[in-house]
Every structure is written in C-alpha cells, then in structure tokens.
Image (cartoon, rainbow, N blue to C red; front, side):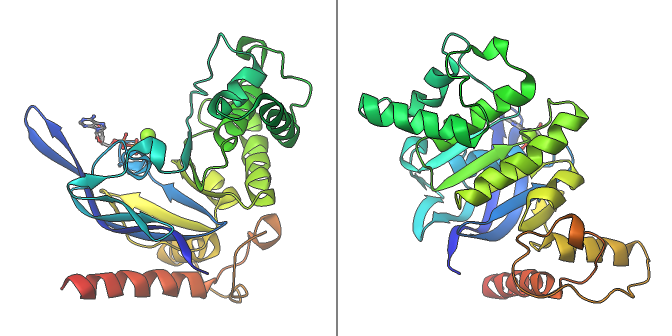
Length: 282
Ligand SMILES: Nc1ncnc2c1ncn2[C@@H]1O[C@H](COP(=O)(O)OP(=O)(O)O)[C@@H](O)[C@H]1O
Ligand SMILES: [Mg+2]
C-alpha cells in the first residue's frame, strides 16, 4: 500500500527569546492511505508541534513532509496550510458559537453551491449521528455532541488527511470511550486517513492502525497496536507465551484481539524502516 503521509527525518524547533529550542528530533513515519496513525506521549513531548508542522503552521528545520508524494515542507519551503488538503480537529471543539450546527459544518463549503452544500451537511450530520440537529446552536449541545459537529466540520471539505489533536480530552470518561469508537467507525467507513495524537493509551489502542510512542521528541517505533502491546509486555518482563497475532492489517483489531501478543510484522517493519533511515543518514 502506498504511503499517503511521509514524515522523513524531521527536526522541529521553536525560536524563543532565549534562542532556538529543539522539540522534535529525527522523526520518521509513513501512514498508508485509509489508515489511522497515532502519536502517543505525555503532555509536553511535542505531539501538537508535530501536527502543527504537518498542517503547515510550523516550519521543519530538517527533513521533509510529503503528502501523496508531494513535498509539503522542507527547510526554507512550505506549502501554505490552506493548500494542503489537511483538516484539523482539536480538543476544545472550536465551534463558531454564533453559527448553527449546519452553519458550522458547512463553513468550509462556502464556495460550493447552496444545494450541494446543504446535501453534504445533511450527509455529514447523519454520519455523526446528529441528523435533525442542524438548527441547534453549539451551546445547546453536550460536549460529545459538539465534538461530533467538529468532526463533521473537519470532514466536510473531504480532506486528504485529518489531524486530531487530543479530541476527547475535554470529555467525561464514558463519553470519551464511546466517542473514540464512533470516530474510528466514521473514519473507517469513509476510508478517511488520519493522525490522532493523545496521551491516552486506551484511545490509541482503540483507534489506531499504527502507533508511535513519543518520548524526548522522538519515536522509536511506528508499529501496530498489537506489536506495541507485545513490546510493552515484554519490557515489563511478562512471559510471552501467547501466539503471535496474524500478520497483515490491524483493522478491526479491538476487544477480540486485545489480549493477544505478537503482531511481529508491524514491529519488524518499524524497526527496519528506522534502521534503514539511520543507515541512509550515516
Ligand atoms: N510557540 C512555542 N514557543 C516555544 N515553545 C513552545 C511553543 N509551543 C509549544 N512549545 C513547547 O514545546 C514543547 C512541546 O509542546 P507541544 O507540542 O504542545 O506538546 P504536547 O502536544 O505533546 O503536549 C513544550 O515544552 C512546549 O512548552
Ligand atoms: Mg498538545
């Protein structure tokens, strides 16, 4: 499967009054079309910085970011955010309070003709389980409903890639679990490629086809949730008596496979790619 998003040997940094502050080092990952990738890491490790770079709001200091084979970012050269075909969704909903639900969802479609816009808005509201809520205002909705509206709004212009920055963080525990699965189902049903960042391991396991754990501005592996789970178990010294999970995509991996180890394919892929990248630079 060809990669949709490729992040190759990227360094990210902020210029501060006290000089340049390095945040992300040597980041490489590839996201296949239709897959959901997840960056998992503690607060402050640089997850949002990575998303901002992919969206075009931060320059790369080294390396390249490509979408569909086209270079979006390299040092000194950047495609502007509005030309990237990338949508974003944040933890704070960021809905326009003075617009109705339909107005919010249709916001990115203002250049479409009215009939097409209304049809697309209706289709999206149906998809996120809010058919009939088009005339409501954001403050009339629960947090979970507002996040569904935010998802519909982000999907409306059919972005090539959707970036989700801790989209469930502001929700109560029950809502966040349900919504995580709902969002995954919506993304999968439309074949939407996405990158989610979160500090919540359960969310990453619930949603992702590939996960990278970020520490110190780096990711060491970019692997299937099964592979990550097995590696964490091995690191914790647990016996690995479980048979390896079947190879291939982790799509649909959820509760029925959650207690299985293995997933060696994804792990090995990640390691080999990292090694290859290191060799190229050496
Ligand atoms: N505009 C900025 N200028 C300087 N430092 C920043 C800026 N934005 C974020 N940082 C710092 O970069 C680090 C990573 O931030 P961020 O990417 O937001 O982390 P995360 O999303 O993983 O919590 C943090 O230490 C943060 O304080
Ligand atoms: Mg963040």
